[in-house]
Amino acid sequence: MAEFLAKQETSGSWNKEALIDWLLTEGPRTESIAALMDLFCRRLVGYGVPLWRGSLHLRTLHPLVWGWSYVWWRDRDGFREVVHAHGGEETEEYRNSPLRGIFDDGVDGLRYRIDQLPPPHPYPILTEFQAQGATDYVAMPIRFSSGHNNVVSFASDRPGGFDPATLGLLYDVLPALTAIIEAKSLRRLVVNILDTYVGRDAGLRVLSGDIRRGTAVTMGAVLWYCDLRGFTNLADRLPLDELIGLLNGYFECMALPVQARGGDILKFIGDAMLAVFPLGDRDPAAVCDMALEAAEEALKGMAELNAERAAWGQPILKAGIALHLGDVMYGNIGAPSRLDFTVIGPAVNLVTRIEGLCSRLDRVVLSSAVFGRTVSGGRLLSLGWQPVRGLKEPVEVFGMEPA
Image (cartoon, rainbow, N blue to C red; front, side, top):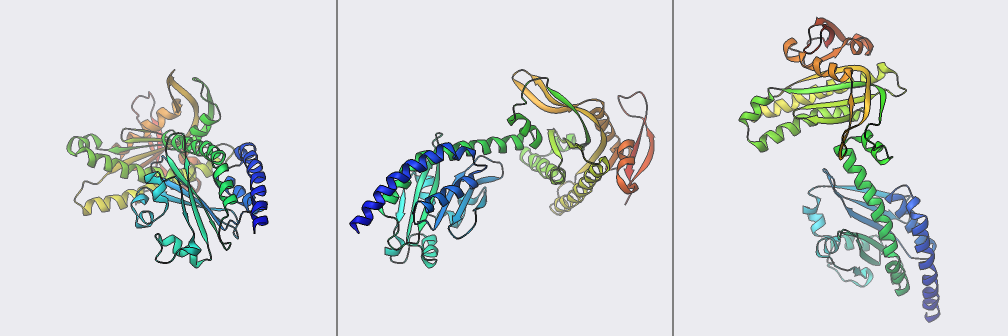
């Protein structure tokens, strides 16, 4: 046994140097946190670490997500990613988890020799692990430079669990592992924030270095513009918190169908929303079809929302949606210290003006003639030439056949 432990200590020292070197050189090149942890755990097994299960638990800054967990098993492929919505920290599962001690209380580490721990176990997950053959469980903090605690855990199924040399190896490589995970987490955080606040395509452009004021490209796109009718009256009558809830429900009905079909929301302007479906090398008719399908789904969502609001005695909502196919200038516009990725051009002016006709023509969806004639199946009908505010000449508009 003494010879075995001495061999483990020697191996552990060699493994530490090799593992730290790999983490610092190859770790940054891995495509994701899940890929990094998968390779890291498999490398540990290759070094002789009796690893049965590994996991990483990260908190994040996201409007919908409280955190992510990545879970790995020796006999399975890859890491399983688990998304935790806000409120997950209030669940019974979290309150009865050993992770809570590190996340909330800043504990320096936890270890439970499951094979020597008589029931009842302090945490339900240890009972589950014992039933699956686990003998040892270790959790360590991943402390980011911001001071936030995250957690990495390791479980073994070898009789006797982790030996001192193995625990020393895991502890010694933790700073290098933390540095790489923090860098990848920060990039993911930046991507999440950019996607949420400036849009998916604009966020990718910013990350790729397209940040100079005045840079722009001409692109063909389907333009979507929607506006809530009677909002000024509602804003005057409703309490602020109720008004915000109303807007969130309305924008959710509009935004989700657009994003599900590859549309990019550029901005919310009060009670209006501007989005684009870039053509790229796609068939314009196919892109018009997707935009119209998004409009139809948005109307269904509005109908369901209004039914719910009516049941609660709340005022129902009415909106207009305008669609247009044309070329726009897309790029960085604004002041030196406050830029915005947006679209400009006559096509943008036209789609907003067409939406202004929805109330007068008593239509929920209107489109330009070029959109109406491009969308497949003759799904839109000409409503004739209409005078448009701000334009000298009338424009032909199309609409859906009344239900």
